[in-house]
Length: 312
Length: 229
Image (tube, rainbow over the protein chains, first blue to last red):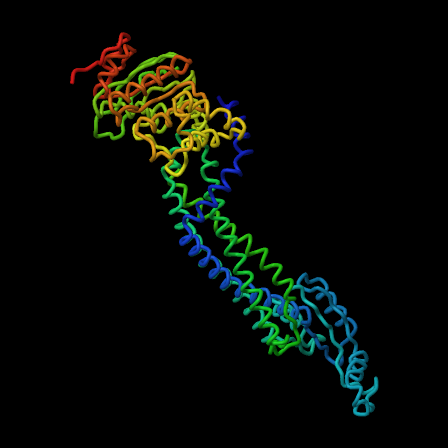
């Protein structure tokens, strides 16, 4: 019996699409009102999700951009010795929090400063290597900006033994990192809540379909249809509703996003020099996520809806 | 081939069992009536055959397979070996006669070519060729029951189970239906008819199994209705 069964299973999968597609289309048509409600709910959920997603992607991009420009400066005492310098350098290089360390001597610092103040060169012309007011320093890039604090502590442990003071944009980094965390968490919360709502609405729509066809399901079971065969059109229906919602929501967001970008003209009103993520890349991520998400919640809603009716 | 070995089925611990230690054997190609009052255990008997429910004790065999040991996934393939005819027909109202029968073949994945070849043959056998494109509501009760029979035999089952097939029909139509079942039986299919219809049972002179309060009371090979009304 098992062997016969397997052979039949294969042939039934082969001819399934014809019947399944036909039945699904009929069903969406028959339940047009509830189907429309499901699509609308997916659209609403995805638009809200999309706004959060765009926000998150952009905040991440800005954070990454700013982070890559962040460095920590360890200024040395004017009378540091070579031994002190080497001890500090070794300690920094040993730490795995640090990506790279460069030493900037007092002469190099003065030179840099002079170059940056080119227009006012006469002001600095009185200084030379004898009376150089600039301190020597280590310029440190950390692997993760969240570790800035720890690196500072490490550097400050050499205070008085070569290190004068340490400086980095502490408050700014902290604010940015915590804002980034906040938007990430918020997006996840919104994602979970809206997913549950959408799944619930699709679940109810498909349940109506299943209920309308419960006689048919019963007959199918008696004639020997497999559960997979019975389930297929309902899952297809739910998935299609989800995908329709995803496509409409994407178009609405795409049009609106480009319109707003055009109004703002790339001006971010941010206190730093950082750029937004490329709109095309954002949209690429968005449509990929939307299709995946729409299809997924449609399928999940349907699976829940039909489970109860399969036990005959 | 159907065999019950000491089958007991209880639904509720506080109530008496629906079937009590029933053992019976129906050979391949037999025509058997199963009779009994309401609540005697006839529905339970059919549900056990279809593996809609499982026996509390004992085992049910169909074509030498222990039905109780089938996994959930194998149940559909068990049901493909059986054709089922219901008292209330259970046709799909939005499908034509042809589509209702074809549907049973679509479900198990037969090709369009096979379907187009076999459905007219089955409808011819039950005498409904001329009604092929009609819808169930346009048919009489007897005609609807013939569609159901055509649907039940379309996949060549080895066993045909009929649950009160004449319950909603007048006597004349009932005899027509029973003679179709007899013809199907003559072609080699085992037929089990669950019925209340005393007259038909007495006329047909087939083997009669009588259930009473869950017990197999009479197994009469010569064909008399086993209990007095």
